[in-house]
Length: 163
Image (cartoon, rainbow, N blue to C red; front, side, top):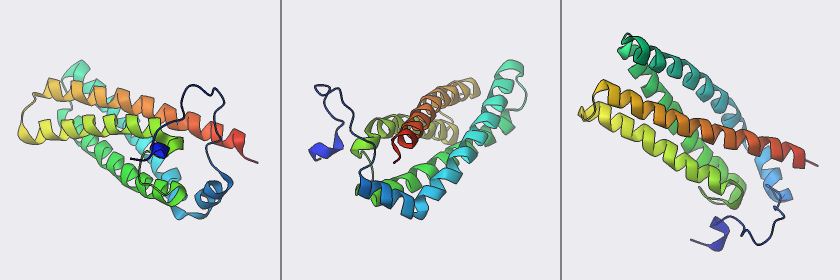
């Protein structure tokens, strides 16, 4: 791994801009930016619906099938946005993941993906009871909420830095 994969050291309190002029031009020119811009709100909507279904199941014991299906759909949208996001990162920054500008977002994304994948594993193998599966889904969703906030803050910062 090259040094560019790691975030800037804390010794310099000035943050470099998110995008160099060339990276900004590549970001604006690639169709993957539009794909990410469409998938992100779709994933967030799926998350909200699924969260409501999971909480309903936990509160009432009803709707396990709907909650489970919604978590599977949420996981599928997560995988789609991760794959297309890696392609976007390659086009813009020249590397599939862990570009300097998105290092911490990618690191938290790994946790989000691991938790969602663990849910699928628990569901498919029967290793977890429904209550354990729903608890794992809530942990995955909490990590996703943190990750989504990271990306919203990064988007706001990128807009503020725009020429």
